[in-house]
Length: 154
Image (cartoon, rainbow, N blue to C red; front, side, top):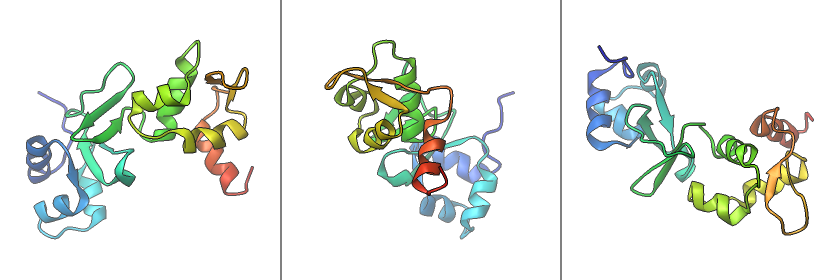
C-alpha cells in the first residue's frame, strides 16, 4: 500500500493528472474550499521556488535530479523547499564552490539577488574576487539567518 500524500481524492486526481496546480485550481476542485482546507488536505506537497510559489505539486510527482531540483513546464521545485535552502545545499555541498551563473543554471533562475545578501552576511563568500561562491558557515541555516538579519533581529 502506498503512502497517502493527499487526504482528498479530488486533489490527488487533479495533481496526478496535471502534475502542477495553482491554489485557485485546488480550491475549485474541492468545491469552494478555503486555502486552509486545501493545506489540511495536502499532506506531502511542494510549492515552487519560481513564480513566487504560485504552483504546487506532490512529493511523489516530482522527479528531483541529483541537485534536488525538478522542473515542469518552466516551473521549478526543490526537494529542499525554498530557493535559499536550495542554494545553501548546493553551495555547502560543492567542494570547489559555484559561480553565481553556474548555480543559476542548476536552479534555472537568477541567483545573484539571493547570493549577494548571503555573501554580505558571511554565509557564502568568495575566496578571491571573481572566484566561485563557497560555503561559509554551512552548519547554520542560511535562509533562517538571512530572514532574521533582514528583519533586524540579528
